[in-house]
Image (tube, rainbow, N blue to C red; front, side, top):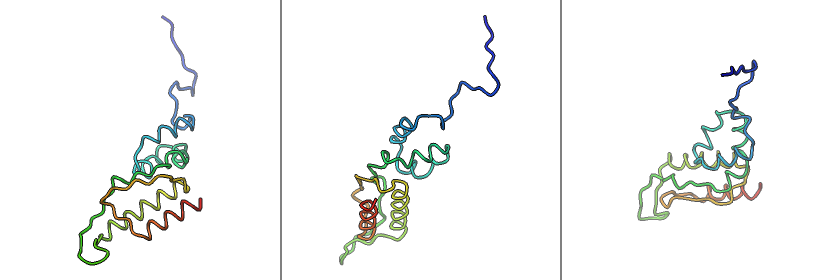
Length: 129
């Protein structure tokens, strides 16, 4: 039986930052919105760069977000609390920054209330990119 001696500084294990960018982007497509916008940047610099690739951001799925609201009898017929609006605004801003305006599809939950300002801002940012 032979003895295998590794050269000093050589490791048979590949590092995440050595992964081909196209493969990495394909992997990133399987992550959800919150993983893309927060946690993945801490893996390594390559992951931070790859999460800004346009491919993972073509479809922005906000279907997991819902607003905390009550129905009212006068216009606008729904009152959405401030924390819900602020959270949605924060999420939209982060996603727009990371996507560099490459969002083509926006999926919303039927209980997520997007106000006119949020929708107009996002449409303008995407169309300007």
